[in-house]
Amino acid sequence: MARAKWMARLRPQTLLVAAGVLGAGGIAAAHVLPNLQSPARPQAPAPCAESTGALASATGVSPADLQVLQSLGQRRQELDQRQAALDNQAAVLQAAEAKLDARTQALEQVKAQVQALLQQASDVQDAETARMVAVYSAMKPKDAAARLVLLDDPVRLSIAARMKPRILSAILSQMAPADAKALTEKLEARFAALQALSQHTGKTG
Image (cartoon, rainbow, N blue to C red; front, side, top):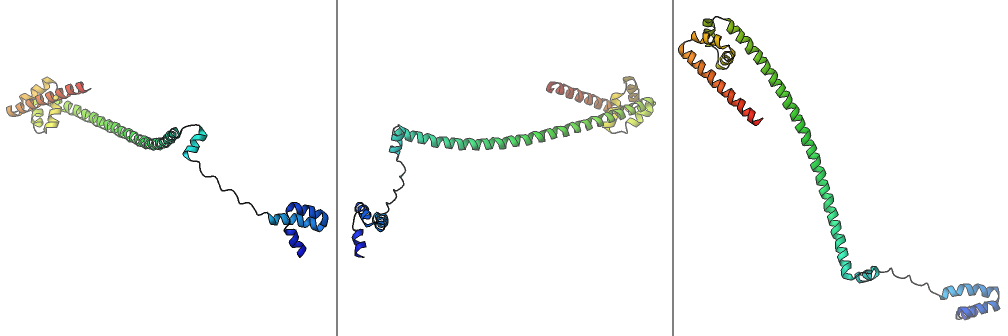
């Protein structure tokens, strides 16, 4: 025991020398004791983040210039975010425009269908009016006059406006003066309205 205490007080270099003298036992002690005598070194603390001045010095620019660069970088990020938001808004607007175009095309198709139906109805009406004109023109003027005064104005005016002047004059001569006057004035008003509509369509077209 006294021998072990005495060896513990010796320096590592001395122990190596003593190990050669003491033999194998001394060699083992010489390898173990230095580890006991040398405490583990504490790990170095992690380096702190570099300050603005140190970073500026490392990059070779002044602190003021570095702050400007940092501000520009932050501004660039804000602009990128704003551009992304604008791109999203543009995509939404494009989708809305596509829907509007689709609806417009659908309305144009419906409009074309309606116009086709109206034209078809107009053709049928014209054909029916032409047939009635032929019927009344084939009658005797007295019979045609008696029946025309009983018709409503839209039908009577459509038939009378398509009659040949000679046939219409014969029918008017068989009407009562008041009925002939009313039919003549309404035919004139109808002609004036059609003429005004034709001139307006020609200007707008």
